[in-house]
Amino acid sequence: MRNEILNMMVKNGIEEDSYVEMLDYTIELFESQGLGTDYYGYHNINHELEVTYVSLLSVNQKKIKFTEDDIRYLYVAALFHDFDPQKSVDKPHEDSVLKFISMDKKLLQLINAVGMDLEIIKVLILRTTYPWSGELKKNAESEIKRCFANSDITRNNLVYQEHIMEIGAYLSVVDRISGYALGDFTKAMEMAKMNAHALAWRPSLIIRSAVAYFEELLNKETDMVKAILKILPKEMRKNFFDTVLSFMRIRQQEITIQADYAYENLKLVPTIECMSTRDDPKFISTLYHIFLELPTPLQFEKENFEETIRDPQMIINTLRLNDKNGEIVGFSKGGPLEKYKLREEIRDENYGLGNTVFLEPLALKMGYWGLKGGSEMRHMFIMQAHSMKYKFMTSFALRDVISSRIDKEQAEFVTLFDPERWDYYRIKI
Image (cartoon, rainbow, N blue to C red; front, side):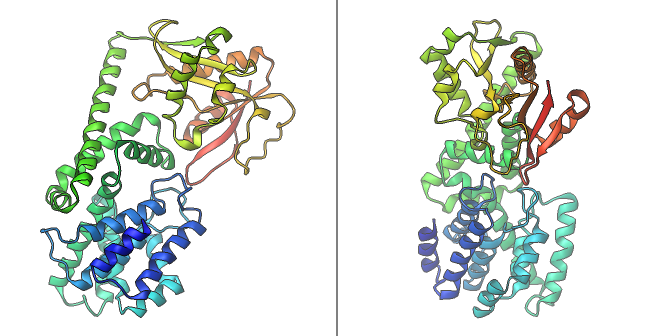
């Protein structure tokens, strides 16, 4: 992506060394702050570079006329629009972003070297605030007024202020389109899972939130979306609309499943699986495909998946449709804590004592979350662990979910993780 951006910079006349240094400095900063390609959150370096690339790729759209200076400001704002190194949640706080770009000596030196007005860059970043409504919009507009007042270029120039706001609106839409235009639906679904994981959403919200996101974008930003998509290459337009349609189709399937469940046309049956079934390659393959729907950080023992299913020390339950021989739509899996290599930040005092069972994150097919099947599998798992004389069970869950179990199950936090808020906890069995 770096080379693609460099090509677009040349095409748009952004050739001074300082601009190239900004690009490399951005990549270096994201990587050094743990927000590089390995960071499992939507707002990582890939997103920052994708937005920068598409911003430059579609500048010749017909809705806004960009000057050479406009394009330079757009480039810098896109490059740093989401950089929030101290984030406590994945979604960047624009105030933190502005604080960073106002105080970082190296960045200020690079901006001054090309004679840019920092206040204009701030306005463009503030305009990417999402959603652009309610209290968030009100706060951003208040700060934008201060930035305009602080700039000698914009202070008494209302026409130019309006133009800057139009550029910001363009950047805001590019911010929401770019990742979905630069890949197929597999990439889009991974982005949705990354977003959900990093924002601590329940899995049942992933598809409905994606559909609501695209509907708002297409309905409220119709003209800008059309203008940007029209100038993008055909393959990118196809990627975007294929993604929108795919999410909507899955949402239809979800609603159908939920309706069938509500009308009692289907039942979810938690089932203890015997070893003869667990040796069946078809059974293992079915579970593996469901397993792959989990966000990557929740895929434990991926390389040894088949061996863990066949391991008699592992507890395996499935969730089947209608009866114990029905279609498998989910499963729970876990075993002795000592069989797992967890995140290095975790210091579990019971590790090595043989008294703790680890429950991997529950795996369900898309559409079956939120119907209480996962909860029933979890309770079945705990019952089996009790029969095997385990004293404790540990697992990962959303912070608010663990909090709700403190009174009911004597749950306790062992290690907390930010920004994900997907924490490691323990209960007594």
